[in-house]
Image (cartoon, rainbow, N blue to C red; front, side, top):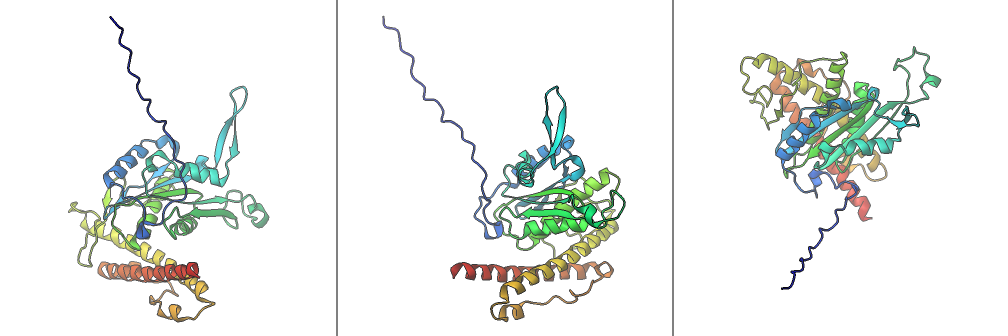
Length: 334
């Protein structure tokens, strides 16, 4: 009786780790694969479990199948340093290169499935003592090393870089976007800045340096609202806190409009620089926003007016971005 020979099993193919290269263009010009927003939310919840990492995580913003989440890594947490073990079990801290720091934070496990991971950083320069006679620890006269990376979300990195300066904080902020297949237009920049601002605020609250009720850990779903929708996705279903919700919404819109005014000035400057050698027809077509040369007191305006201005600013930003894209395409075709 012959002994049966064991059948040969084909070994599984070796797993390969795909190195992350340059991210595809923004979803608004998108070539990326849509990611389910429930997957993004699950990943974010896992990220919140890592509180001991010194990461301050925003609540997710959901808008038309896209999800936005921010991580803020304050400089005080040692984000720019790494502990190097020496003989005898002791450790010493050395400074990481900015590139290594950025790549490490963008590769956070909770951002694995994100379509885009926009990052910006700001840290104090060692040259500050050459220019500042202020007391130690003072930010007056200090120099800062700053930078950003769009990761395919065009213009978003610079906006985050400017936000860190406006908030006067040191550290690294990473905003992940999961693109769900629906184009959002310029409002995506508002969402990117909103989650970044909230992550920074959470850090300030933890050290007793900032406040505001905010939204806490409550998940927010932003709705496409018209001027008659007083809730606008904030405090929906809470009933008794309507007045507080409206005041919070007015404050948020006022801050966002002021930020958009600054963005319009910057974008118009970029457009003017690109059109200097050519004719000024493009610049003349740029729609103007009233009062951008002086500060507007948005906080004194009614909610309906703020919503109308929000849409107008979005339209202006969208127009300028289209003009910039058009000029870049023309330059490439030459």
